[in-house]
Length: 609
Picture 1 (cartoon, rainbow, N blue to C red):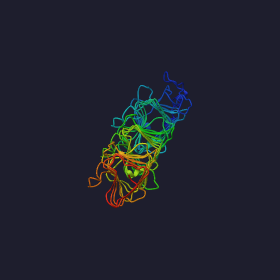
Picture 2 (cartoon, one colour):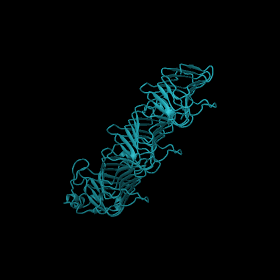
Picture 3 (cartoon, rainbow, N blue to C red):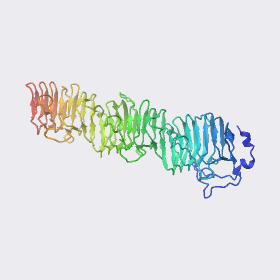
Picture 4 (cartoon, rainbow, N blue to C red):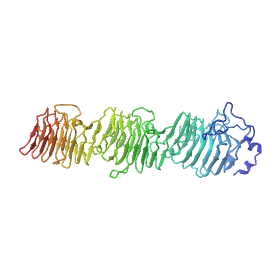
């Protein structure tokens, strides 16, 4: 180290702040600092010493101590790959045009300013700018900055990339701690920390820069709620370095005064927690996927919701959405994603796989689980939610799905996990689509709730478990599509006079638009009470062309109708096969059909008109 050289300097040069200082003309040097105190040198232009010493690379190499209150002019690049440079309180380093400080493996830079006497890194002339400070693979506990002002920097690229400007450029496996550091009036990005950088920070301030900071998903956790943003051209934290950006360590993102801006496709493979009030803006076409060992906890409040939206706020279909591939599928569930008081907007830029029908704000195809409550999904160009058979959304309640193309596409086994407390309105098609193929099956006991909007059954469906349907529920069927209750299944549809359950065609057609309901099980739970079955009987149930019927009870099957209205529709209201049983009571009627047909002498029909 060259410590003796510095301490041997004349008192006049070492203690330049003790001389009568000059200040930048027209500048208020008592600007309030980020601590709330006032200081002549905390922010704004620093004191201009009447005289300063030259600092050369030859003195910098190997490390040194720059004493408190000294002033320096730097007109050549400074490099440090061996030793520690320490800059003490009140010191000022003024750099020439495009001059840089480079700290590499083996070197460390310690800056020890105070609130009353911060360290200044800038230029003597505010009309020129210098390159800045870079750390590449520099590690150690002495990489710590306290009370520093970094100004008029980021003039030149750090590498061949067109956007590699940064007042403070961190790369490789660098470690750095920042406390009470102010980035102000720089000509490019203030701070850039690469994906392998271990950055910790507190009480940072970004003022008057073109951009604030660009960091990895893990690096975004460095910023606390106290971070100050004022007058930057782009007042956001940029997050991500390419379309495979991956979070691999557990972090929490604090609620800042500005959004986090996720710039590309990103993968969450470790726990990510978002504090209430966090706003995440997504670049065009970008996405978030929670997978592997990842999880996402986004728990906001009514007053401070968590927001995911497009960077072009309000542009429908701007970013892709959120994919969930983690969590348990068996009870008790271990939720991979928790969304509460969250707002998701502007999704649907592209499909999640080769199937063009997988455009969705929340996409759950692989085995995974999510607890979604008090969440708003809107302004999407596709589905609000896409829930495959292996997805789990138990507890889905009190959500508002609106102004999307379609609110939900749900496998039949997922419908029973939807509480009837969510709202669906303003969507291009306000129905909840229940379809994933012509072998869709309700394979577990479930209750289908009244969602206040119809379920749309777009393909053939089987019921192989007990299914209850809540009063007021409406089910619409695509053309010639039917629902078949297999031997292990049953349907109990319990409507009321005030809130009947309605099965109908997607288009009204008295001659029959959809196929109807078939019952193969001999189960006392097969009971339709205060139910309307409309527009069914479009095509025969088997090779016999006369088997067009709204209700088709096959051999050994049974069905009870109570105060039911079956019709109008094509063909028979009910066809009862040999060995099957149909029981009617109350005001059950079959208007607009050819009534009830007994296919054989042993077809048992009781009380039906």
